[in-house]
Amino acid sequence: MTKKLLILIFFALIVILLFRVENNHANQTRSLTPIATPTESTKTPELIGPPDSISPSESPSNTPLPTTPPTVGLPAKISIEMPFTTQAPHTNWDALHEDACEEASLIMVMHYINNTKITSKESAEEEILQMVKWETENELGYSITLQQLIEVAKHYGIKTARIGTANKEKIQKELSDGKPVIVPAAGRELDNPNFKTPGPLYHMLVIKGYDKNGWITNDPGTRKGEGFRYTYDNLLNAIHNWDANDINNGAKEYMVID
View 1 (cartoon, rainbow, N blue to C red):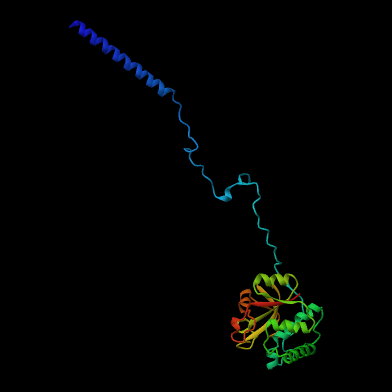
View 2 (cartoon, rainbow, N blue to C red):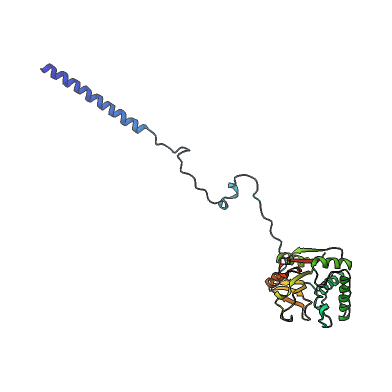
């Protein structure tokens, strides 16, 4: 009995010893394992700001980024010195003169281009009558379009005249280049207190300048038309080339002589 007991105690001691050795080995393994460092796949994503926060050195390539060239500014105000006449120099507002705004507008611009003067009411009247006579002989009618007005100008020796789409920027650019601008209009849309009510159905005038308040014109429809001012919106909204069916459907166009 004593021998068996001793054998059991011996084996128990061996088991206890083996358990302690294994436990010490495990503790040493844990203490020697290095702390894991994030790999490429486990790194926290780097936050990137919006494109405009990237400095030039951080640009994705060495190619320079495109730049927008600065807009060439226009003068703050312009007023072209040019001759003036009304369409009825002797205040004879008969049917012929009521429709002579196209002729008077062209005459003013041609005198400016040729650097000549309108010397008197009589000379202005004679020029208007001669121009209307030629138009009648060539069946252009009383109310004429800008395209037909170019035909008239060519008859008087003007070689280069053109038509453009009317907007504020284009008209101001023409004026800054020293070119008075002829515009057709739905006359009853124009804010001009000098017109006899209800105003002309179709009208034509010359824009010769602008400033912060609007357009500066030579409007032949009134004896007070030299330097007459319209607001930007009023004149631009009224611009319509002649349309026999509905003037308000006429194209928004202007004419200049180069």
